[in-house]
Amino acid sequence: MRGVSVSAALFRGAVLCGALTLVTSCGWSAADDGADGRLPAAPTGVTAAAGSATSVHVMWNRSAGADGYEVYRGTTKVRDVPGSERMVDVTRLRPSTAYVFTVRARDADGRLGPPSRQARATTPAAAAADRSAPTRPSAPRGRAVGSRAVQLSWSASADDRGVVSYDVHQGGTKIHSVGGDRTATVVTGLRPGTRYSFTVRARDAAGNVSPAGTAVRLTTPGSDDGRSTAPAGLRVTTHRADGAYHIDLSWVPPRTDGVITEYEIHLDGRPATSLVYGGDAPRGRVTYSFYAGRDAGVTHRVRLRARLPDGTWGGFSAERTVTTGARR
Image 1 (cartoon, rainbow, N blue to C red):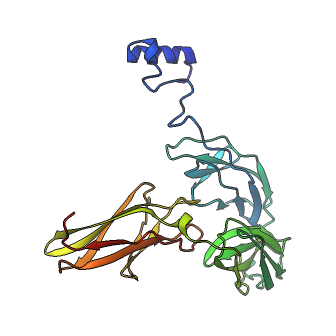
Image 2 (image 1 turned 90 degrees about the horizontal axis):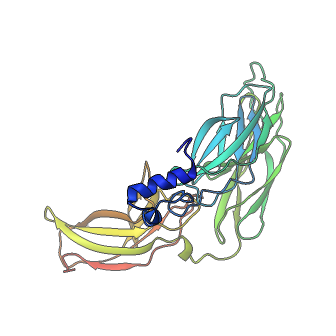
Image 3 (image 1 turned 45 degrees about the horizontal axis):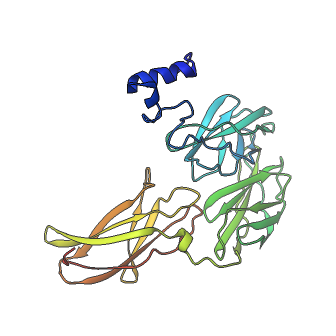
């Protein structure tokens, strides 16, 4: 509708529907920007810190209604990020250069929200022929800060050219990064009553990374009965094909801060099979079928759980009972 006034657009919509009074009933109005007319909110808490002479680590907080994010360097989009992630390393930058970054949230229909506030970072000078990694961070410590966050600290690493940043890993996944002048940080977005393991690595301007420091293992206080992270609406039936019975499942993914890409299915109290999505995971009702044997009249108990975006397992769904060959 570039170059077309709102009133003219409404008039055209009215002609298509047959009358001006039918514009609203056609589901078409000047305020209609999609299913509910609301764009994703601008991401908050955007930070940028040099990770090396040629990279900058950008982080932000979750935006309501976001299905994904777009990261911009100046006016140029440099990365697409899935909605389950809120950090990215922007690479192939120039040493000793100042950069400005913004982030925009994108909803499931591909609509972009407004840009975030600008975050600035300057890459350090390149270190010529530097192949020596920093020493590992020593004396790591940690404590829970409430039921959904932990505070980590460590002693500084040594490097012949200087440490530029520290990378924080949860299990085997990098989840956070801070500048080389900092030896403490707070990790948020955790679950109550959950055990976590964190390690820290130092990075220099040439991108050399130290060995990981000793793991810090912490359990967040509180309890989590699992109901808020469990798959819902589990339905179980069976069907017979090629002389064998199969168990058919359908369920609704738990509502989490991100996309669920893995499920573990338990049969009669034991893990039976896993379902892993390598591409786009379904956000609506999920369906899955697996082999259950050739005998009719066998009763099974079925339940499942999801691996959450933070890497931990969520709660189990309600358990259902199904009998092979039984009439529906």
